[in-house]
Length: 518
Image (cartoon, rainbow, N blue to C red):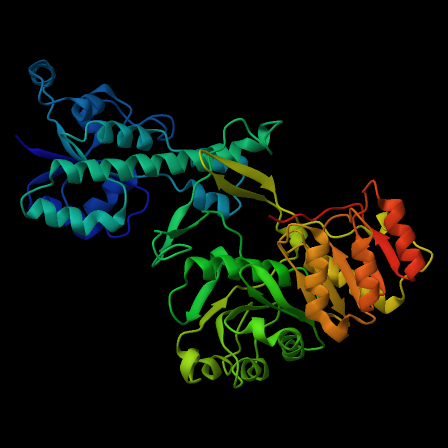
């Protein structure tokens, strides 16, 4: 009995040596359209599916492999005498191997295809072949990934594929079809009036990197990337140098990058445990970095540095100065003469991860949703990309912020959005001087931020991610020298809080927007 391999692929990468190897093993190749033409050009004998079925390809190729003779040869359970008898009566040879990958729906989407063009990239016959072969894995092997060609051929050349190996291929096949269908469903979701929060959520992610361990060494972990991840984010960043990224590196790097994305001016953020310990603006990137480092050099040690400008040699030399140590450094680009500064630095320079992100789009162009797992479920939320609305700001005190205080209030407000709640940021002259993060009460966060700011709190501005429930935080800030405060407002105690600010000569602005971050 001849051995039949059905081969029909859109991605022909690596296919030629594979089908040559199959031919050498005695397989007869059954194929369609472009794949059949490719096999002939390689000198590999091939039979057209239409000749095998006796039915032509029709409807511009929409119907090719959807035929009972194909699917009977795929789905026959060869351990059942009745199935074997049916194949003999129909003069059908079982198909032993299916090599299929699908129409390039994703590639067309990324290329900006029209709706009609996109619909033509929805494969019908391919998924049907894959599912049929995978269901009958006891008797059929299905290969959907070019990366598996060499391994499958080597196993066929040796003792053949075992049941468990065919089951593994079936798993990969079903996963391949599931991802494909999820991409299509997501594309059609725009027609759903409830598409923002659909009844059924089918996200898909691809393995980007296996990690040494997770948040702690006893936990397994990997990094998965969205197929349509936008440019200029941590998922699409290119590592230019250094050790492999860890789970915690990736969390911190993402937090740092999303923070510097907030600013049009040269900005630098230094992150520890997803919270900023140094953030600053500057006339140049090197100035922004030095100011961010100065704010809290102790916490910055071993931190993650993100910049919203290309790193030039001057900035690189500042970053590798004696007494510094950073795990990861991210920037849109690294100047050619900046890279050797890191690479030639003794000690940690050999290991620091350098990530090139490409151009950073502003937050309002990075809209989307965040998915967060819970035990047995998930939370799905719109990303917080909102800046304050100048038209909605309310100065609720007798004292109005000065021009420089307005600048610092806006700067602090954009930073506080990236600090774990309860979140407080003290800033002065475009530099974060104090951060209070993750405390169980707001006055505790205020106390921590002011303690870190020290003398720099005098004349500084303060931002709070949520309203003040009592006036104690205002009194504490005023005693430390804070002159202006921005907060959402909305507390029952707002009159008491505003009265305290008036009594202490502190300007206060309400935004009407809360920025909780848990």
